[in-house]
Amino acid sequence: MQNRFLFSILLFMAMIGLSSCYTSYYYVVRHAEKASTPADNPPLTAAGQQRAIALCDSLRNKNVKRIFVSQYLRTQQTAQPSASLLQVTPTQYNASQPVDSLAKKLKGIGGQNVLVVGHSNTVPQLILKLTGVNIGQIPDNDFDNFYVIKRVKNSSGDTFTLFRTDTYGAPSP
Image 1 (cartoon, rainbow, N blue to C red):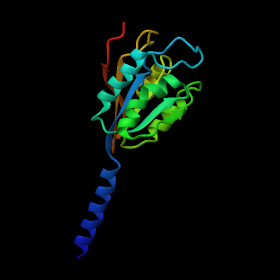
Image 2: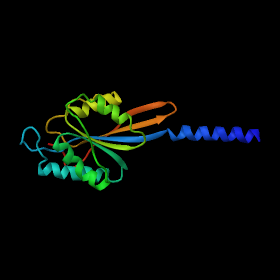
Image 3: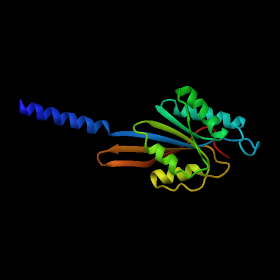
Image 4: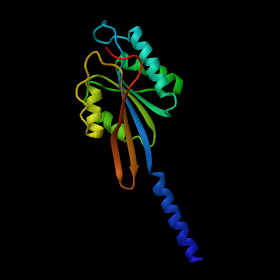
């Protein structure tokens, strides 16, 4: 009887330990092509709208449960087709602030796949903050990069790895 009780306790503890283990993915992109006006908050161009649809197609089977966009229209419009398809309401972050607060929010999300739509300056900073990998600057005319960060949390720790760099939509010039 006592052995059964000990076995039950050990089994319960193992299940609790396993439930806190997970692998999730963070899909990080720069916003799609933007118009030149208005200068302070331009919308997407027609090419940008097509790229936003291509992003949606790329994420269709990725089980994304959270979406983060900045306060700028171009990131919101880039995420909109994905948000509609996935039935996810985007969470807004302040792109004018250091990426530390966004990184902290992302680290607080456990076991869910996430899309982050950022900017040419925030995407490299976020990837560096999460993974320690410096991807360098993103040129002004580069909109097609699709960065995949793999997060593995287990009894050994919590690691973020730049798992893959792809492209999506029409090639940037």
